[in-house]
Image (cartoon, rainbow, N blue to C red; front, side, top):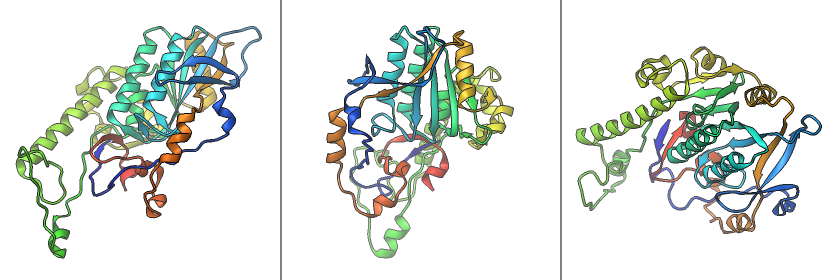
Length: 330
């Protein structure tokens, strides 16, 4: 789902907690020396050995946590993921890719940029397989819809294909405590989602227009990626178009995933599509940079209460649009 986070929900700068891991990762030991679009190098970690003498590889790229353009080192950063996809596209030893996914969604533009990078990789003839774990919903599904095959756990939560723009109306609270919001604006729609007053009918119509536009864009991505749905109209007419979250089994029945299984099944599928049964499996990771250390040290102190919020909520920023499962905002 898409959500706009009002300034009342989160006020001020967002501080990220960065898991640094082993400082030895600053030196990309065993790295392939592949540059990312955001700078730095990519390390290759061997997960499964291939046939002796085979130089072909299936690259595993993590899509874990909230999808943001600039996420913490261990988050789903569109900048980093797109860089890894580009590196996999240009690396002649890589013959296929697995997106190792566990995400509730995230920023609209970040999800779209990763989706576009996936399509560009596939243009080279290298197959891309999505492996969904606990969750591959909303923005995560937006990305997965562009891959050749989606493998989901039977208990995976996926789907959540729809749009939600939300804000808070605290005008009644202000009235009770004797406060009044004063806004000076350049145009009548400039404070469209301001929480200090109730929306006018014209404003509600404009918001619904935004919702419909974004929903149709999401539906088109699904139609382009899934064989069962030949057009956007087919997706809009489907039962899941109400924005519901689906289990892996329900998604399979609805044609939103291709098979139920686990990581090893995704590996087998990627090897099959790449015609590379003997390919080894490597995980791509951006090597930790000194700038990551600096980022962690300059994160602002935002109060003890904020530390009790889930990472997904702490990652949200006011005024941005997100493809998210509704549970993230509860």
